[in-house]
Length: 41
Image 1 (cartoon, helix red, strand yellow):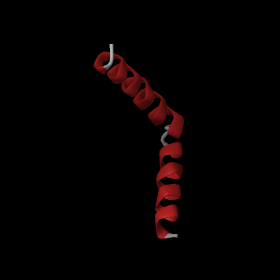
Image 2: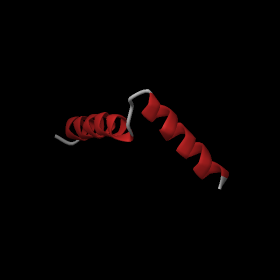
Image 3: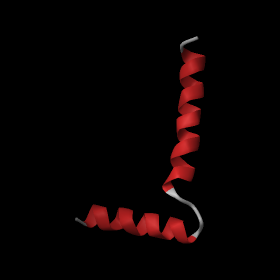
Image 4: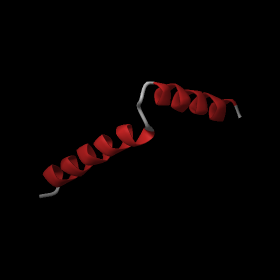
């Protein structure tokens, strides 16, 4: 329960800064995709 509340607070705090979870997830997925392509040509 405490972990869920802390995650919610983190997301709401990030949203006030204009940062949404998508702005964090999308670049990570792109980097992961590039890394996979380089590792398995």
